[in-house]
Amino acid sequence: MIPAEQETRILRLFHAERWKAGTIAKQLHVHHSTVRRVLAQAGQPEGLASMRPSIADPFVPFIVATLEKFPDLCASRLFDMVRERGYPGRPDHFRSIVARHRPRPTAEALSSAPHAPR
Image 1: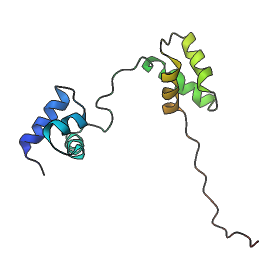
Image 2 (image 1 turned 180 degrees about the horizontal axis):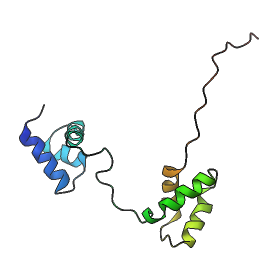
Image 3 (image 1 turned 60 degrees about the vertical axis):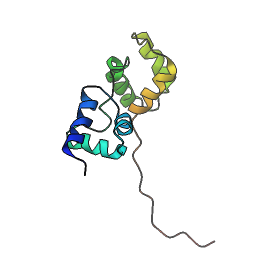
Image 4 (image 1 turned 90 degrees about the vertical axis):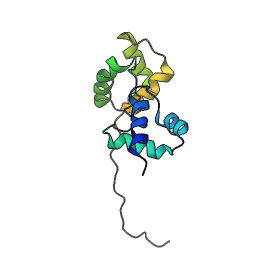
């Protein structure tokens, strides 16, 4: 357990100075999981803290809708479609955006039946 004063310092550095959890941990000589715990207790969702707006944000609804209709559509074709709609970014960055929003296939349960002897 860390003192309340240390928790206050962590929250101030995070919110006011916009420091990442790792930077705060290094500067205050505490473990990074301690910083994450303090942030979580303060209601800060994991991973959403330091996200900046992306140039792709206006295009995400189109990307998601298109991937719902065509889940196997390759990222390069989707890039061309979004580029026609005004996306100014590069294809390498766009591929990671598509991967983040591509629907995951549903997992299938494996059969637990014994195998036939050879």
